[in-house]
Amino acid sequence: MPFSPASLNALIQTSAFALWHYRTTDSRATVSAAGYFAPATASLRAGDLMILQASDAMALVPLRSNAVLGTGVTLDGAVGPVSLLRSVAMGLRASQSASAVVRTLLLAPLAAGFLAGGSIPVSAAVTGPIAQVVFSLRDAGGAVIPPVRSVMVEGGRAAASFPAPPVGSGYRIRVEDAADPAIAATSRSFSVAPDAGILLIEGGDTLTTEAGDRLRP
Image (cartoon, rainbow, N blue to C red; front, top):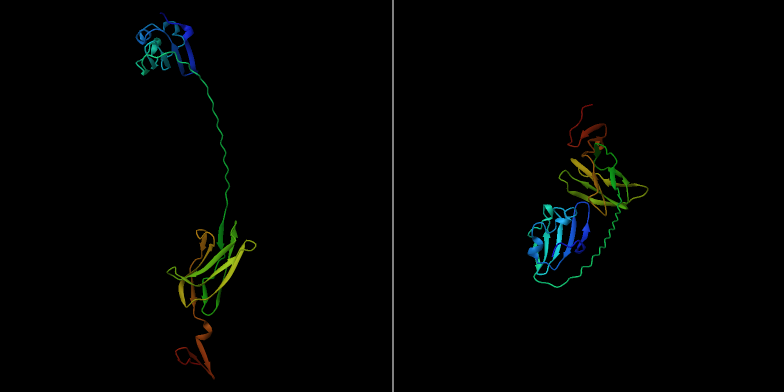
């Protein structure tokens, strides 16, 4: 029998693509013959797909130019009538929440040198949710020189004091977040010199050096 327009239905149709369904009592070979769909050439475009339900097969076939069917894929052999139910349900929900937390430590500048036997005052400005910091004194090799000071942050600042280490150079102060040591700051290097008060020793009316050498008047 000839092509039946009433048996051709668009299941999906957009400006660029359509999925058609066609059911007929004709065989697949008859439907696939050139010119069968000629009356529907204005609607059927090259690149569309068709679910073909013929008397002897059910297939998914592409449409070529001039409404000619391509080879396609056979879904089943001889089949009975099939009822198609088309329904589409789509939903999309997205949410995003982000916040930035800034935490910084800034050491106050230190003197270039200190005297043996004295003390080294240190302090740091603290920004962000840092409750406690740890101050440590490091030697030239980076090793910690006890004691280590754990200090609570108050009003955005923290302070501590260290006894001066032995005479030497390359010392540094490090401060870090007690909860996250990756947030830290390290001072520039400084040195510790001998106390000038013990370089000279007074004995009666003479001055001698630590080595016992008498100074000339």
